[in-house]
Image (cartoon, rainbow, N blue to C red; front, side, top):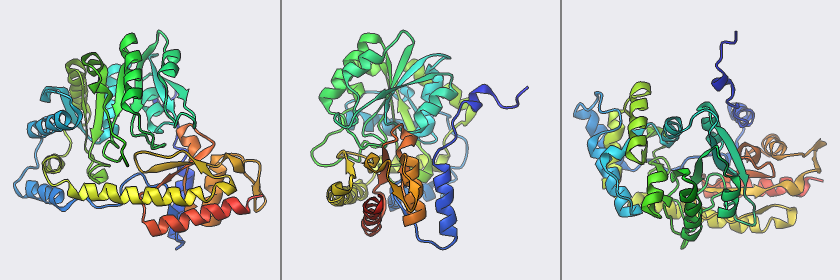
Length: 400
């Protein structure tokens, strides 16, 4: 008899662990590593949010609260969804959890039965398929293309649907590609979902990180029918630089929200109380610090694209990202070449060699279902970014 459950055994170990371990070994040895693998803002949480948490502690707000979230926080979330997304929810339809990742797990657990198929556009955030598998579901990957800007089409979705399809996981702006779906594209996808009665888990955690004239549009806002099918997931990690605070939320139909709240009451109970008071301050307080953060990301994005445009002669290309803080850099032109006697066969090779040969850490695209690319984050200083990109170009130029 095995001691580990089939569900736990089905979870794939993170393919980034080897790269991360090597990067940490180099750092421990005093080597300066430029890290493009960061998935969090390199800005501190705004002072008024930190002050609100301290104030909560001083006032003794250190006890249990309702498992699904403080009533005042849920009201603030409802206000945000109405004013910013055009979505009307009651507090009873909102559940506050320990980060958006936790909200995603809760949503899948509450809706997916063994054998249910969940459509996941690829490239995808690496956690999606693992969550689906852990809940007994079957991930169904739909390959997007560079030509489509890494966005799934309504026709692709229609073709992927089977009698077992229960859900589409829909992430815009996207991690890892930075793709942002237009309102028209979203409406076309929504039409297919309503036609087949497919639930949509709408991961909108990068909602505020969009650039230029691009606008975020929530799929739940398409129609009352689509809203009934949508589980909106969001949080404060990216938009308010609150990754370590661990607070996310979902909003959805009443029956699903009840199921999520019930499950959470028996698993983690409430998010730590002082963070919830900090979150109220985030929603209700000054947004200027975060607008400044987005401007800084926008400037780095422009600089990264400017430099990458000059590296096309080395076979390095990319699809212009419109949101989040990532670029998928296509490195397949290097496959078949060698560097210092080592053959380059995939994104893991590129990531490993960049780290060991150039002290640059990137995330191999195979983690996201795209072995032809590596993911670069621009959540690092512009000085480090420029230096790191020059080293990547040097690697590509020297490969033969």
